[in-house]
Image (cartoon, rainbow over the protein chains, first blue to last red):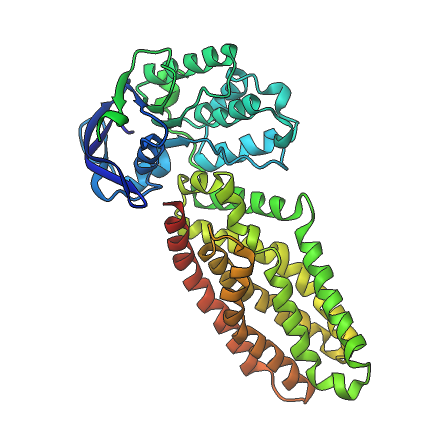
Length: 207
Length: 236
């Protein structure tokens, strides 16, 4: 299980523009890192680089277990990392039940986790609807279902709260707290502060 | 979630489990909402019905080219739904989700190509005998038409998946896929039509079938690796 996330000398560009360079960071189990910075500062790119979806120009992203042993990157990402971006991978023509089921099956789930996800995000009345009929907030809650349904140690979240109303923001904050209590790690790009004690990295200030 | 639950290993879908859930999803997406494979079959049938009308129904003009035209129409019909194979998952973030699963991207590309074969290649192979009859091929050849169309369909699916991955992120990707993929469709068209021609003149079809199978195996080995590299490149 991922216990520590280590970024060393990480440099990331999009096209010709260098977003940040020589970023060093260590995040341990139970910690939240809030990424802040203006639009285009590189928050999403950093999340994608950690998830292995974007090749950095230089530097490394490493994962270590509780004893400090490095984990195989490919395996760690395939088993222990959640990435929830603006795009949620949900298919409009399928029902919420099919999509939640597929996403959790694909990522590996426990039955307890799946039931818990439905309960935690109030998904029960949505399950038989087609995803295209859901509102932005309902859709986001459905996408969040996989975070809880498939227990993985590192959550990479891109403005997770944006479409949610106050009630579900609170519910999601509760799930984040549970995740941290269970020795999870969270890196979240945010504009509004998270309702949790966090470490903050201001990407705008790095360049 | 309790600490115990996080410690408890999430039930990993395993190779077979993950293959099954992805295959089921791909087939559901291919058949659900619009019935893409039926459109491909309709297109295939229309093309082969138009030729006798355009060129005249005389068996002497139609007979020698019937096998070749059937294969050309099959290749064109196989192109139709390729655009959505990866583009749809790219647009809605599904590819990011697939990249973070237990399987490698190479396996994902392989499974998607197999699903394309089952969802589109199989119905087209079932339509092929009808198309062949419309073109005036003798009825005794229809089992061979279906068999070669089924084998060739696998080749179309693998090379098609490669083309679809290469065209990711390009504007007017559908057109680009056609231009990239059609030259790669030449060998199965040649071998498939060749098998029909030889059968028509009572020669053994074994060599042509063997070449067709060899092409499919070749495509099945190359496409997952090249396709996965193209997908990674498109992701960033």
